[in-house]
Length: 286
Image (tube, rainbow, N blue to C red; front, side):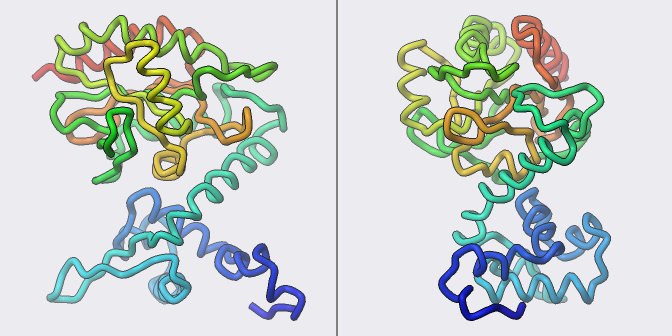
């Protein structure tokens, strides 16, 4: 990309050399989703092998991806995000959020979604897909935890905007404390059916820890402040109280990391919690 001399000290212009290409952005989107091998990337993007090879080589040279050998005969590589690449995830999620609101939506700020909208279609398309292997987030218990419990027959993964926040006129943002309390009260029933529960927000870990202590939350709360989960699953977000927030949804995931059910949008919170227990219990049965 040819640049004007005045752009040499401009971070926006320099970042555009990486993200200013349509295919570069989509390659990064797919790597974030767990499609890290060449054939998987080619299949997801519908891109010719020549063009994909060129784009991957360029992203490696720019320090956004690195190649990791996984097979010697024939030689095969996985393309993984570097620290610099992972730092682009919030930007990708912000681009998605802008597109969902201003291009695919009507421009209104909302924490919910229309049943005939792009976000609704994208979330429900997760049903039948597998979550990326090795996806972990910082937890309230002081360590990174897998978003799908390896020790349970099923996992209920619910995202929420945040607790202890004055939302103002943002439809669908309220109710996060209620939702966590309802999952807390239903926790014994989840445990009896060998179902794990994970709550996820973009709040920082120490904020979640304070809430978990105050409300005696028995299940882990995971921080997606770096937008790793949002990017991996292309989850809907909205901008509120100074940061991008998850819209409220519930995924029921089996022990093989396959999404069996998606509840979105969540409007009736008590019903959604009861329904997630019913669906997860059925999923957990042999």
